[in-house]
Image (cartoon, rainbow, N blue to C red; front, side, top):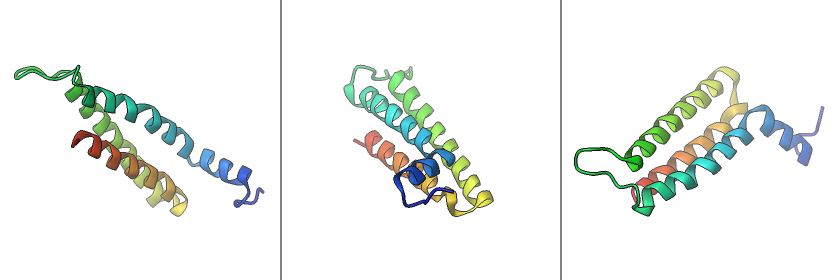
Length: 101
């Protein structure tokens, strides 16, 4: 078994607990959402929601689902999934900060 303190041990740990996939998902989705919300090109009208509201709603719901999943994994599998929960909560905080610009 690999030493958890070695670079290969850390990478294997992150792969095994889906942290790298989650991090890449947040790394792709957050800049796209930031552009959609902050650019002003996708503003909603008074009666119709446009891409800024729909994208923010979609990302918020997906972040909540991922946080619930990682919380479930943390409860059922133990504290090995704590880092996954922390990554998801950090991404949610960044998303809320973007939305409250």
